[in-house]
Image (cartoon, rainbow, N blue to C red; front, side, top):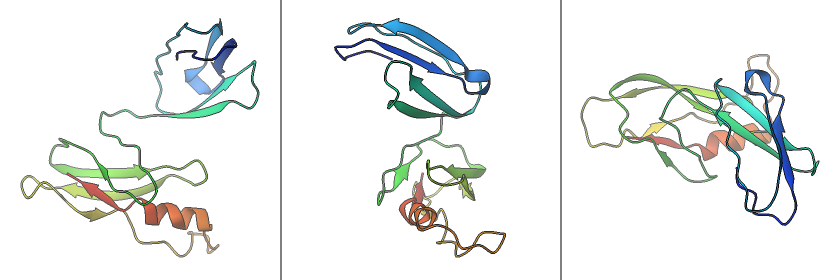
Length: 141
């Protein structure tokens, strides 16, 4: 994590098995951390309390960052059955079973899911969750 700012930072996390503290470092310096455990890691700066980032550590090389209203591509995924997961900081983990074909046009065009109308407990889902389902439109091979 490089520091390009004119002030020092102290980047740290207390998240589960991915805890670290990089210590104070100034502009032009860089520090590295390796995450050993999968999951969401909350990262903070002890100098700047407003600074917060989330890192989603996955156990695979097949991942993408989605943008609202856009599709995403996971290249060179071997044929088979997979669980596609989508996450947003204001929602629960969203999952969809997909099948990557052995051959074809190279674009599976699977829909991640239709807008769900309710959670399993009968409560209406939030507009944010509904929007995430709409934004995460397709899986492309």
